[in-house]
Image (cartoon, rainbow, N blue to C red; front, side, top):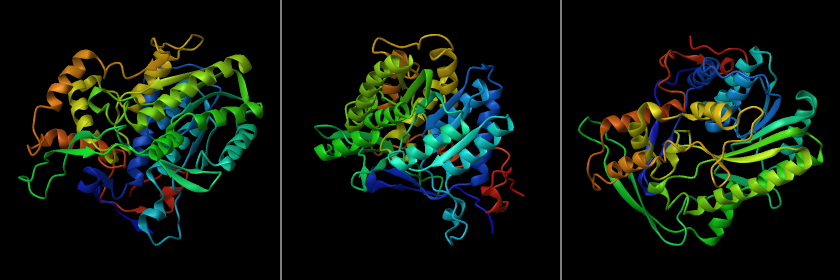
Length: 423
């Protein structure tokens, strides 16, 4: 089937806090964007030969795909990705289902490039909470990665998971803890140039105890411990094994929803488990585990979290050239924070901080002043709005240089490991 996807389709949903629901993606654009990550990593100057074999859980987007690119391109690591991305359904009459998902195509392009460098690059598609997925990953490690892992990057950012004990889905909740919180963001713009985006405020109700437990289950550290225990039991961890769990703590302007909200409980749980796993790995394989706090970045999930688009639009503008996307952060992680043959560079809490630039006192002061400068109903800067929307569109394969969005592509060919082209 020949298909063209000329324009990014999306809609703002006021009833859900003016979150942005994307309606489509461009597979060729996603693949070109992923290939550009590999090119940037190759030109970064970071080059080591100590990569070994690494597992990346959540390696199809954001920090996970960026970490995989750096591991393979810069460290020469063989990698296995575990991610839950809809695969193409060639027989489907639904155009989106026919071509799969952005994560699938991002992984396809990364693996194509890494294999061209002579590296093993494979994927297990499925829910990391499913014991069968863990079993499949273990078999891949035995069959294709030499039977021993040198490291694991845990970058899972799924909003939900299936509890294997009940077979029922468990949904996380981005809500405050204990009391309501006011969130500031912007609305969508209308059809004419005069219809500017507006500043809006909304009140989020506090999460229930049940929602808190569910959020901790989905985003906390218990699942990481289960994977590490299973890999240890199967004798699949090499001496000196490294675990890096990557998450985002938030900042003072979104603390009510992040660090002091339900997700903050889950992140604290992840940090708690990471410290405990560190002790286990040191005792069992002479290894280590570190919790990595990443900076605010634009990912596929950014549009779906109340308040994030507004904050991201401002922080990108305030930081300018200092703003790091996921790849820049992961390059800094492996170059400066997890150097070869040295201890991790951590703060007083034992955390690797990649959010240090964002949380700089002067940066936060400027952000705070601009964050509260307007009042609800005021127009939001259309240039900042468009800058964020373009960056968000790039996570879906749009606004990518060199892609002809008017051109048709073959829906079967674009889903193959061989190079894709828009002709």
